[in-house]
Image (cartoon, rainbow, N blue to C red):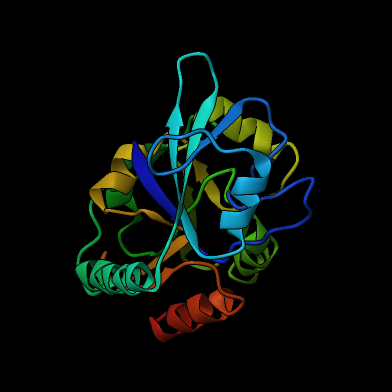
Length: 227
């Protein structure tokens, strides 16, 4: 079971609640607390009023177990420290090499992108904050169209699920499904996470979690790197 943290959580109505984009009325989802005890809708909503993390486990029958874990102030402080350590582990370091197949089956080799600025967005289809920022990210892609900037969006979701998602949502990055192993190699566990990589393959910017300023921060770093 892998722990996933989604920053900037939105709770909508008592009928439907979304954190990672899931619905409390989805019959394919089972909710449990950290002891493994089943939780009903009211119990889940109570926890979601505060800060929490979600662990996801896929079952063989197609169902999912979501473990909802409330975070104490101490855990929040620890999470902040872990975030800082994560950023430090990547910033000004060389990006790990990759060889991806995009959503259309085209090969994308990191070595062949040398000399270009690479912007990475790590996301997944049920991540509500990831979805919220997509329109702004699409505008960013449009702004740098024709420039030597490549926008790539790896997700751990399977190809079929990702394609289904894209029939309803526009996302103009180069979409890379089934990229779990690469995300794990970078220790990406908080979504969304953005990296800006310079022409020499060095990570110059790390942005963790949702922010209304994310495209401004990415653009500033792109412009700081000599276009």
